[in-house]
Amino acid sequence: MEDKITELKNTARQLRINTFKAITNAGGGHYGGSLSVIEILTVLYFDIMKIDPKKPDDYERDRLVLSKGHAGPVLYTALAMRGYFPLSDLKGLDKPLSNFPKHVDRLKLKGIDASTGALGQGLSIACGMAISLKQQKKDNFVFVVLGDGELNSGQVWEAAMTASKYNLDNIIAIVDRNMLQIDGSTEDIMPLEPLKDKWKAFGWTVFEADGHDVECLHESIIQAKKSKGKPNVIIAKTIKGCGVSFMEGKWQWHSGAIDENQYKSCLQELGEGV
Amino acid sequence: MNTVNKKSELKPCASTYGNVLTNLGRSNPDIFVLEADLMKASGTRPFMEAYPDRHINLGVAEQNLVGVAAGLAAMDRIPFACTMANFISQRACDQVTISVAFNKFNVKLVGCYAGLSQEKNGATHISIMDVAIMRALPNMKVVVPSDHAELAEVLSFAEKDTGPMYIRMPRVLPESLFDQSYRFSFDRGYRLREGRDITIIANGISSSVAIDSLEVLKKEGIDAAFIHLPVVKPVDEDIILEAADKTGAILTVEDHSIYGGLGGLVTEIVSKNRSAVVGRIGLNDMFGLTASLDFQLNYFGISVENILKCAKEVLISKKNIR
Image 1 (cartoon, helix red, strand yellow):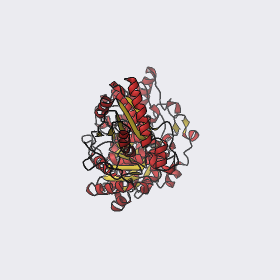
Image 2 (cartoon, helix red, strand yellow; image 1 turned 90 degrees about the vertical axis):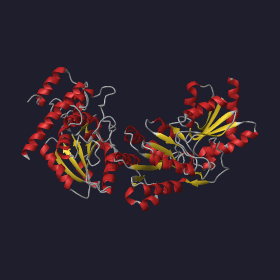
Image 3 (cartoon, chains in turn brown, yellow; image 1 turned 60 degrees about the vertical axis):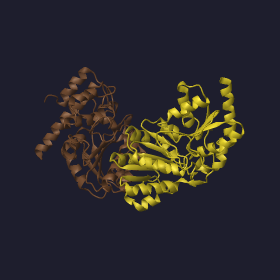
């Protein structure tokens, strides 16, 4: 287990570096909310999810809906590092007509289970997937990664009620709780707290985790998988822009661009070459 | 050439929708029926009773209805998601756009109580732009059936077809508008009557009114052709261009805004490379009313009298141009 955690930490470090490079190569983008979900996607794609890059369409796979579709660069990079396509393909990020648009497009790439980008829609799609799996008596899981800003959207709570009504314990939602959205603090723009109580009131089992601690995330997801009868949500406490000190905790870095000097010092800070 | 039946009584579409899906659900275990607290309007209670694990009621939450349907389609199931046409096209427009159309998920969206058939529910419920919205969406197919037999055929076609589709279903339609030889085909429109002076084009509940107008036009000395056009996307362009060539004058009839629906569509096609006059009957920048279907059809000009009046106007324009 210790080896595994060390390996996941290394993978997360590499995923953060590669994602950072891909976004910078594209001329900038959603650094903040991408860097906050690195460990979440690391644990899902390199530890938890039942997937096979050689059989991306295998019906018996786990699904992931990246409801915060603007974190697409992380998902692309994770899929590349997992062997779905070469890492060098990421040069296409944000390029016209490439298979790597800013927000994920399932028709362009194997390994993307749903095209997202319009916030608030992912949990409903996950509910449909989970209802189908239940009805087919299949034991696969549907993972959903939600931004905290998108929890402003009423549709998320319509879907939360649905998951509860149909006892969709095969859904594990992970909220990237970085406390920031485009215009500022989530608690200033549209307060979400008490968030744990909200999910509980909607009939969910709630777990809390350090969203940058792979061991903690691993444990929480394992617990969530074992928790039956109700849908499960993990509120993962994260730092927007995690890993790049001048971006960390700054709503201004929801998206943006950096210059060459910043790029070099950022890579150093992220441990490139270590 | 197909001919048309005499006036047929209007009957609720709920019975056909519910029965056809229940039958399809028997042979196809992938069919799911999704509701947003309007099972009474769509008629799917028999499906729910027969296949409770494939009947999903999402409550008054149309955006979620569409999203859950998308998720089912992602699992290769065949969801039929139905709610009132105004809600599915307007309230859930972004979900239809992104979760369904952009994803190209195999979701069948059914807009029930479409158009003026909402009657006294009035402007808040009468869909006047559902066809325009759905038609503008990439990947979306759009069908507007005109009688129960055609609705049943459209639903059976939808089960076999792959990809997003919108079916406009009024509260009521004639049971049988066309004769026995008529068979719905997705690939074409139907010239059900030949004529030299003008071509009337209609679909949905308006086809029945348009058909009724043909004899009156004839009595007035107007030799009108009639095209029934249930599939507005992808549309049979040839039949419209041919109508422009043959008659040089077209009149569209729909219980929908004249912007972006059937009238808009025909105008777009004819304007490509034909010189024909196109008149459009429908709601001209207006909301629906709180009134009976008959009152509203008359009020908005979807009537034999108004078709005659507009046909004469179109023919004068045609004469002036030529």
